[in-house]
Length: 211
Length: 388
Image 1 (spheres, rainbow over the protein chains, first blue to last red):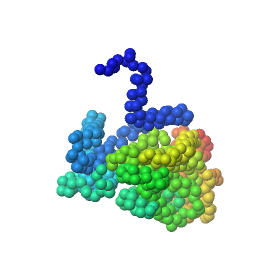
Image 2 (cartoon, rainbow over the protein chains, first blue to last red; image 1 turned 30 degrees about the vertical axis):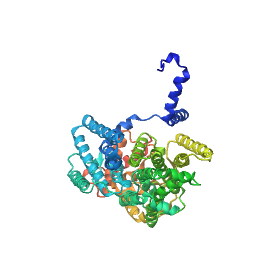
Image 3 (tube, helix red, strand yellow; image 1 turned 60 degrees about the horizontal axis):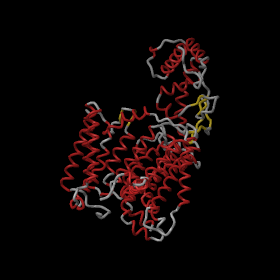
Image 4 (cartoon, rainbow over the protein chains, first blue to last red; image 1 turned 90 degrees about the vertical axis):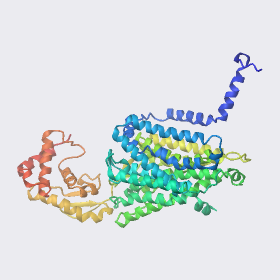
């Protein structure tokens, strides 16, 4: 029986395992850049971060938030369908947890922080992006299946504003809740995406054998 | 070998995507067609979108090649290998991006924009390329170290998110790599900003590539410490230069103009020569309206903002909007740098003269104002005294 009370152990005996754990976790990769960033912050002239701007940003960025879970769909689907995942004792735990966490976070944010019109827009955009992601999973090789969701969303958000709060007519992801064109585009993309995915499943083309 | 690597890179699959992105600013009208620098700078607005794709592609390439890490470690040139792999995926993006830049410059030149070897245009293109390389390398290193295909979308979205956060947080000196809504004649990006950006993005990309080279099996070669130290110093220097650069991204300088015509005399940059007739007709009509009523009228208009003897103007705005043209014409009667039309009398004088000019051009119904020529004379006298 080992005596594990701290009184009988030296200071080194307590510190050494901590260092070993820190090393194993590669904490120096986190600590060193943090120290460097802090030192750099001291050297640089004081740059006040304009929080107001971030508030304004939050007011306009929400329509494209569903991009985050949608862009991960092709990888997640492939991961769940892989032979490795089928044979594993626990099925893709961390990935699935992270994914469900993200989706829940966005859903909760949408439910509690935005008025009803926003919820409709968020639901519409989520449906569109999931459809697009499934379409990409079915048709595109694994290596580039993420591009449609990311590129379409980021392009529309970057170039789609005439002015703050006033989108171009073609920027369907930014349109108000009662915009028919956006709803038609969403309906077509979503049904095509779900249909293609149910019929063909993930595209087998990949430039990488399963590891 | 390099050609084979470039051909096999998954970046080849994203060429249509990048080409589509680069085509967008060309499809959305060409107000920039008279200036090479303006054309290229507004085209460069797509830099961030190309960088997003480059980061994702880099991420997948890093993941793909990471499974061959053991064989790569046996290569006699192993230190250089990750750097080469990064070039494979980067080459496509840069070729497409620069290819469309040439198209944009070609459109400007075809419309008569003067071609001198534009250092400002070339250096800002180089900054864009460095930023794309930085995004690509970041993605590659993340994929190489984390060995997951999910790095691709995450790297792409992280690039976009960090751009948005930095751009809206007041770090424009680092992030505003392109995009201009009006003429850039007489402006150029300040040297400190260009040098800082090139150092941050260029040295940052190279540093990441060198760090990735370290992630290999046990090696007899020492890690490339001097390179890392040098590149880190370059990166930090770049950040310091950017942080201490003067507030404005652009520096003002003189505009080269050719003067010609009389009643009124027009001084235009060579790129706007094709607009001379149109501008002469528009300003001529206003001048004639003033002269018919025997009121003082400006004798000349110039694109050079440092020209104090003539009324200065920016062509696309005054050509598209008749009200902007009249407002610009009225700068002859007061100093726009000093006069802010504070008092009611000044504002009344401004409105009276502006409305009368608009009636003269058929922009307003003749009954909308009943000022006399004497009223206009006193309005002009009022505006001339306006200095605050």
